[in-house]
Length: 217
Ligand SMILES: C[S@@+](CC[C@H](N)C(=O)[O-])C[C@H]1O[C@@H](n2cnc3c(N)ncnc32)[C@H](O)[C@@H]1O
Image (cartoon, rainbow, N blue to C red; front, top):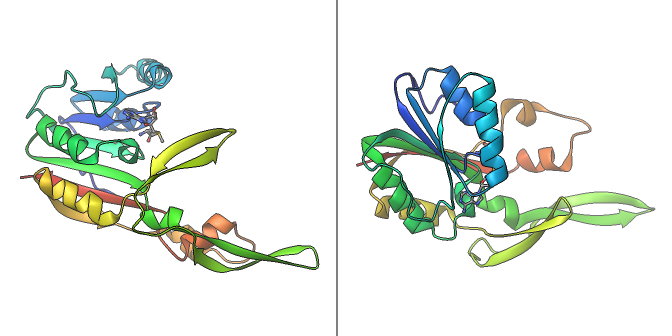
């Protein structure tokens, strides 16, 4: 989406860096300094190995993003998080910490599942042993920000579904000005027809993720 622009010579911190592929992406584009935070030892190991394999270095911190971390303040040109921020148990506190790591005018970019994604599901009926999709219906209230459990890959995750205004207000309170918000489905999915997956059909009706670019004031 070209939200970063030219990162050459810039200092970047990824919150919830996972396997390090996004850090490598920025290393390939000549970022000057790369830092990554993740709660998972395994993911930090993966990220370290990936960067090393490609001849890059980065500083890694294995910790929850909500903790007081040994990260310099007023230091980074960019802090970003790809499908990570929604895991925080303290959104206002996490945004304030992120603002402190950034230089003035530094950029914060993050993506997460769109709130509507968990509120809307297919309604199905069975006719002559054939399951038919009747339409999309609300199965949770958009306003419900309580924690819920969800099965994933034989395990279970616990998360909450925050309203878009909750993100925007927490950003404002942390001293950010929003420059761009993206709610869109990729062109290929939008133009797809015929026998497409339920998820793709849903993605043609509503955004499954959102992305915000904000600047520290
Ligand atoms: C979906 S992955 C995203 C990985 C990476 N950003 C990417 O694009 O490949 C989410 C990551 O968030 C990490 N995570 C979850 N909760 C966290 C927390 N409270 N603090 C720091 N990292 C967390 C997980 O360990 C996982 O690596």
